[in-house]
Image (cartoon, rainbow, N blue to C red; front, side):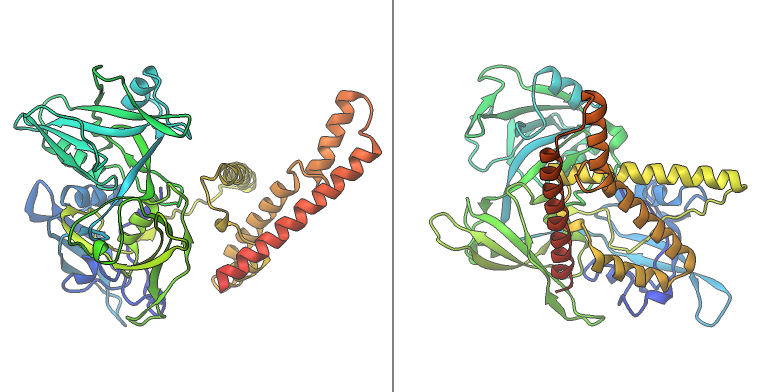
Length: 496
């Protein structure tokens, strides 16, 4: 998860950014407007909304995020320290920020996907594993979740519009979109009293073809204790393969690109979307230079369970217009649907849309020996990170679009060289580490491939036959050439 500090981008980036906030966000409507270089020093106190209290010197971003979460859906007042133009004085400025709400494609609700992750040590991990529920490619699907509110009323959140199970008269049955489900549970937990229990049932996949109910009809649902320690956790589907999480339960699930339901009279229905339509790709509008106009961005192809990230991106992008490539049942070719996302005033958003600076800390070595030690530490961490990223790409959790070749390296090197020589040296060091890791992969032609042959010779007592070595060398060369062509292709498509 990215770590930020309560400071807006410097004035030097004013030409690249129109305002230091997402264009259609609460922060963009603040009065007076935020300015580049502003540092947030105080904000509304959730315990006493009439007061604006300073942020602590230690970990101010943690406290600011806590206030964002507790004041979601409510106006806030922030005080910033502003460096005046052509002056050395810093002036405190009080800014009123309206409440923020989620943007959603009107009338469109997607299908619940598989449970794909359980937090280690969480209530969900302990209970679900004990009941043999799964969280992987063979995972289970949340069918419904039931809670009891502060007034003693039972609410059952069902994840499918076609759920027909008969419920008791005292249970309020509510169909909820998978993206909104975490908010509904967090809202319940914030108001609930005493022990907080969530009762769930799931659908189990049977040979990846039919879905059968589990637990069996008539058995007791699974009970999970809500964990308030994760109430302020900032989990979001940052990557295309990322799932949607319920922090309080310690589990996460995919959201399918299959349309589950289209509200009657909605913009989605007017655009021609129907239940069981499959969204194959999405294209967001992007800023046109530093003007208020926008242009169509690149198409993002979506796999069957990759809707969580596009829905999240709608909240953080400047423009709320999308074009969908939709595959309808019985149609020969996909058709295009253009929609404008709208604010859902019943769905508060903690993030106000401010563009904050990544947190950074300068670490200085105490001497040459300490510098070598710190350098070795950083190198080891970088090597481990590269291998983990390679593993994630192979398993499909990270898109191959994140790869880059010579064109991207040259572009980034040019940008970094314009900053300072120290950043350039650091970048060159990172490139060297990447090349070292790639060079030691067990691919013939590379050093890693030679090491494999040497290990083989050590174990067998004789070297691999000439035929095997030649064949493996040709295969390795083909793999390297294919990788070069592929990275060049990614670089070129990224440019155009």
